[in-house]
Amino acid sequence: MARAWPHRLSPSAGEKRSRRAPRRPGAVGAPQLDPLVHERVRLGIASALAVNTSLSFSDLKKLLNTTDGNLSVHARKLEEAGYITCTKSFDGRIPKTEYRLTASGRHALERYLNEMESLIHAARNPRG
Image (cartoon, rainbow, N blue to C red; front, side, top):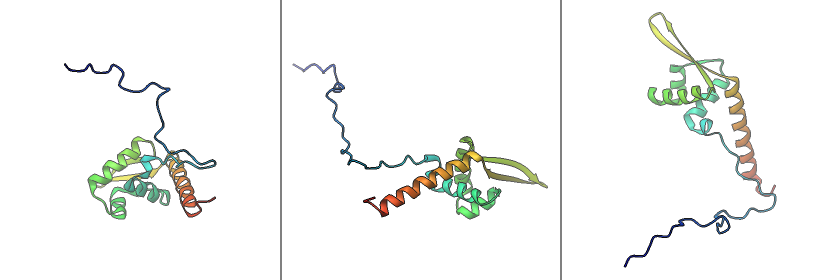
């Protein structure tokens, strides 16, 4: 005869045990890096636009050594987040796409860089 499946699949709140290692007093947790900025191509886009007023699609493509499709997908994610703006125009009959970093994007990049600096500092000075 088959045994009945238990009705309760997970332990109750009082029975749950943490799988995390206990923290040392004064230990600092890892910063929450912005995943939109953390990806290599998006970080490259944001960094390049931080030091240039604007860049064209072809300039970014050459600078980051990436494909049209890859740059387009990553730029769109940053645009949807409000980190960059995209302006499309024509130079004669040639389409031109220009990107600029927004104030929100500059703030996100600055926050990301500060978090990375704190990680680097913690790695170089593990005891404080």
